[in-house]
Image 1 (cartoon, rainbow, N blue to C red):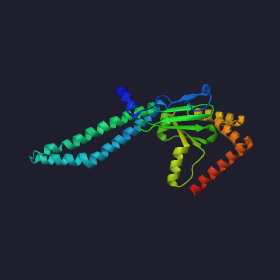
Image 2 (image 1 turned 90 degrees about the vertical axis):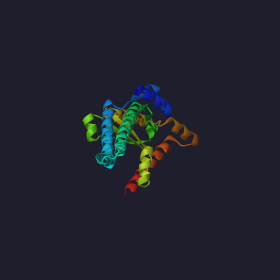
Image 3 (image 1 turned 120 degrees about the horizontal axis):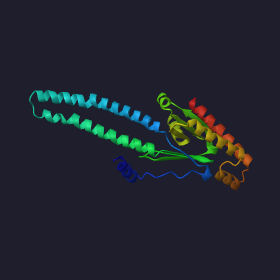
Image 4 (image 1 turned 120 degrees about the vertical axis):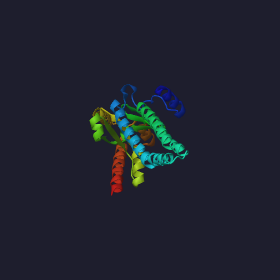
Length: 248
């Protein structure tokens, strides 16, 4: 049944198949996937949301309508029996909705990809809205690992990759984080992936080549490698200054 749902969802939502590797040497391509325990983590969150939703429905609809139906039935009023349909319908709809969200959650887990080459990385996530983000190593500013209590218990973590950009007000900072932050969510080898990216980033910087497209663009405009490096440093410092001012 689930496989039929997957095929239906892929056709309906036009979910693409395997992602195309980002720019870089094809031989260097490494593919990482979310760990099986990440699905358990998502299941726990789903269960909490389903329980919270059912609690709200119990307090707001099911219990009041059930009590009213019981009282009317007790008084011998025939239409009181019809009132029992309200809590029954609410429970059935909540169960169907929760099962649908569970299927989407499983599909979201299976369609999550993390691809790394020697020059860049690409992340794809989402089902109803597919989000694909490509990051050139030349633009990476920071790599960090975050891990909550439940994630520690499951042996998984989130790897965050920040790129150049950002700034603005509170809403602007949230938008900037979405556009300039890549997440390897729910992986069980976060340290290994971070070390791999850092090694390839150091190798790229030591080579002095940078991104091939950027180098070609710089050459066509007459900028030397020294000028390009200086401009990158200025850009990095300016971005850091914008973030410091926005926090203040």
